[in-house]
Amino acid sequence: MRSAVLWVALLATSAAAETPAVVVLKAGRLIDGRGGAPMAPAMVRVEGDRIAEVGSRLAVPAGARVIDLGDATLLPGLIDLHTHLTDKFGVHWEQALVSTTPGQAALWGAANARATLMAGFTTCRDMGPTWPYVDVDLRNVIEQGGVPGPRLLVAGNYVSSTGGAGDARQFSIYVDVPIVRNLADGPEEVTKAVRTNLKNGADFIKILATGAVLSKGIPPGSQQYSDAEIQAAVTEARRWGRQVAAHAHGADGIKAAIRAGVRTVDHGSMLDDEAVTMLKGSSSTYYVPTLYTSDVIDTSASVPESEKERERQIKDAQYVGFRRALAAGLPIGVGSDAAVIPHGQNAHELSVRVRLGEKPMAALVSATRVNAEILGWSDRIGTVEKGKLADIVAVPGDPLADITAVERVGFVMKGGTIHRDDLARR
Image (cartoon, rainbow, N blue to C red; front, side):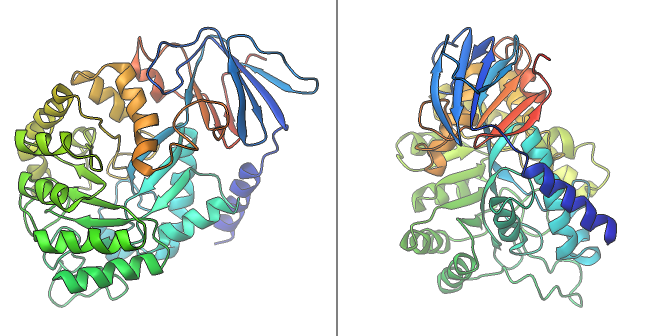
């Protein structure tokens, strides 16, 4: 316990690292997140926590700290819409329920949040922890400067049906996990679950519209919540001014979620032509695939063979659905599903998308401007522009020539505070 306390104290010291009031960044180029041609060379002046000026050649105020990043590329801080930061990679969620504690989840959450920030992700949406509301605590401690991590929007707890993807009582009828109260059946119970999560600090609602890959119970392709139950979640969340994210693999569940007006369809594995048409006609619902998970699940020692087989059955459909969305010109969000993948490897998602046919610039815009739009935070993050929060990262070389450069982030600034500086010329 003493070593854990000292470790957290060290993280707090890192989080509170001092940064001069004025910083000028210089780099070979800037991809500002808006989709236009890169600026080369590029300079960004940061004052406090905001971007003050962007240009190829800027005057350097007296007393400013100048950081020369050489041939690196500046990017807006990356955004991940689908993470599970309090879950430890390599531990199946059912095993965690019977062998770990909320305290362990909180400590791993601090470590995973730091790894994610150092990988260039300055904002994340956390899609629900194994132990309820630990993500709320993690968000609050990050905001208070206790540990370094991305800005977080958190779900607090899953909303799932009995026998569905999030049912924590699938070990034995004689085993109970009383602290996990996330099951809701029927519109009235779903409404109460939404209210409970928002009361306890959730920023948005995560509802499980279909079965899951890493779960027993109803198959991933099957719709586990009725249209009326999904609609109840959306209706109640809207009363609070909040969004709903729907875990949805199967086509029927995807379309039910779109009809209900969820903000995001996450995974979207069996996205068919009708669902694409519905998304194209919607002004409020976005598709957020999680494609890199297939590569990791298939080789994971912690995933049961039965669940690996579930993944194999939908992998091809995932890729086909993503290509459908690309061909239709849909705006596509970016999510990684860490901790299904290792924390800090979030950017591998972009490499998979480019491999499947997405242009590197489109992938970068999705991970920045589009994701900010989905969150409703376009006024503060997602692009490198005057007045926005100074969330800026840098990667070696040119990610438009080699998208894997985003997997090698060497500079991270969040809100004007420098958390990583490996690329600067000394």
